[in-house]
Image (cartoon, rainbow, N blue to C red; front, top):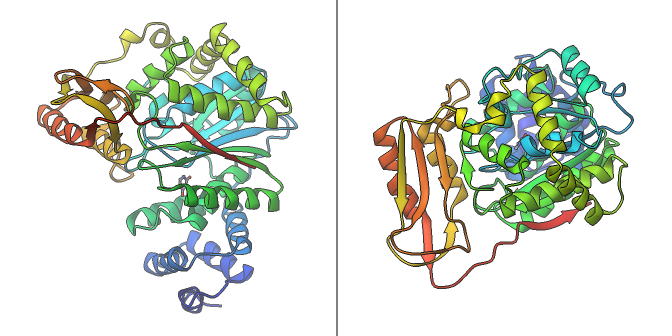
Length: 433
Ligand code: URA
């Protein structure tokens, strides 16, 4: 077998056999195929697509390219959640302790930010001392002891995905249904969960820009889940504007802490409750979705979720004084307000552009080795559907560089589309199972 024939086959739109997919993944992961050849094949997949069978074979071989965690000692049903990526997405930070507060084990591995989307692992590291890079043994021990652990993807899970994901990012091949589906599901399979709830984001700040593609991606991941014996549910959520008000690492952690104290932005609350209700259902702890949502709210109001978060942070070396007193978080040097220059309803705030601005301020990485600034970002004071008067604050920028703050101000002002008509955004678009 050779890689040139495999590239030619996919280039011509033909279906790859399992042994050809296995050959490519194995040889590429072990550095026996050049990046330019892998890039050609990935581009051919991007253009010509894959059948479900090909996607399943690709997913399984990527999952098996590294270790596969055995979480059976944690429980019979281990539920995991994953988002296809968005801007201002602090759902995992809230949902992980909230679900664990029901006694449902949470063994969560989260990625770092790349490009315009942020990463949960970076966000939680804005709590001084929090260690996201513990060993597999310690990770499992933590889940057994306190019911929760949240770490970054430092274990040797799905290394083939890591390599291919980094390559896709450099050759404009990120937004591909077979490639996203196999990337996400290979990591989920390798991380040991047998029940999976997926947040499939849809809109300007997501990889899936329209509902048709979001549904197709959902269907594909559910099919792979079935073939791999992992029950999977997809919740399609709106990412036409950032989720909640905060974008940027410590700013998002502060918003998550406020949420756990009962101060819940409406769109963020809708996503947390919908995903959480399905996680409880898949864990076998409650069939009725509406009832589950009420129970989730109870555990926020009675502070059980907040206390679980404090326990998680303490157990992983973080300074819990920051959770008890959010004014301890380091402030950025410059604070720049963006002021509305006309009256009307906010009709659009392009989430991808907001993500890019936050990245420019230093909150994200352009390449994977960039160092990020945990204390910069922005707060949206107005969101889609809000009425704004001329002279009111649309957004507040937190920067450590005055020029960057001024550039961001101009760009954000242009992003706010203000008009006469009030636009209603629906947060939960669909549930696919
Ligand atoms: N998230 C992933 O883990 N992989 C993708 O390809 C896209 C989003």
